[in-house]
Length: 157
Image (cartoon, rainbow, N blue to C red):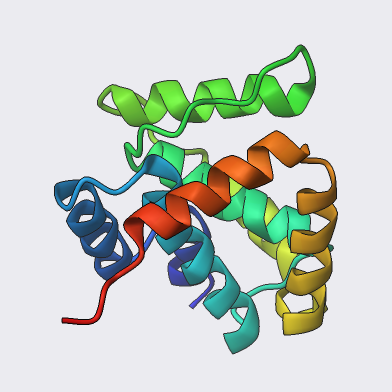
């Protein structure tokens, strides 16, 4: 059973990939496509497949899966370990994978995530994370988002 659970953390479900491809065909943004992978990650945590230390970590796992699955989500900027990892994930997704993931490392990662709790995927934790992320955005960004929401809002016919 451990082998199938290990693969589960690394490989997104086929259903998720299909939903992301459908979003791409509909011309939706890469962040919307990546949202499918983040949603899958939250479901996994809620189902108890594994945990996460924080909502931010759970989102990062989903975004990493999205990049590796080929979503054109640009990597983070900067010189941190995280930025370098997102660059690697992005490159892996844009080319055909040449090397298989190390089973030993996959097992270790999965075992570490299993030790974490499921609080990271709670509605409260996600709300708190969204609020913090929104605070770092400026008023111009919020205005742009509001204009886009008004422009793309579904009209009643």
